[in-house]
Length: 182
Image (tube, rainbow, N blue to C red; front, side):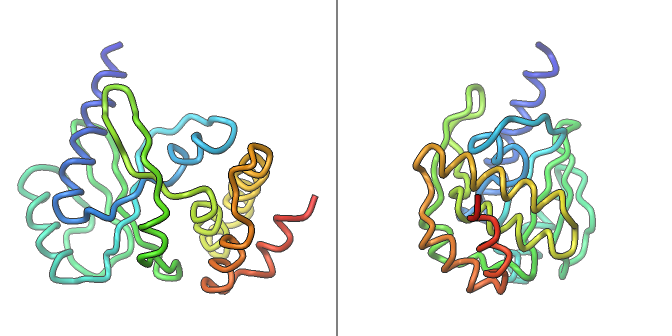
């Protein structure tokens, strides 16, 4: 129970600290995937934010550097790793993923016991993010995208039209069309 309490405290702190600079944050990665597909364990918490504003990013890095471990400590990267209360927190914005107002608007809010309300990417946007990531990271991310698509379609909780639109905008529509096939 001590590990669970420590994890939830770190999670709650991460949401609060990141939200100070990035109110558009959204939970991604396996933790988010677990809301849409068969659960998998994870040892970290991943958030997507818009890291493109270098001034805001510099302020964020300066703020968290005084309180937590952060790597790297300079501006210009697409991924930052924080260690909060011993837990790994990744703050990312893959350069090839279009994190726009529509994606932010379509986030959902989940309530996590001991953490509170946390925004999470929609299943469509999470699947697109995995497809985009699969271009550099490989088949594992494509399998995660397929899981999100299949399980969400099965629950009738997936907007194929929006999904394909975002796939087109991110330059991965041919791969996404394959994911929609049985």
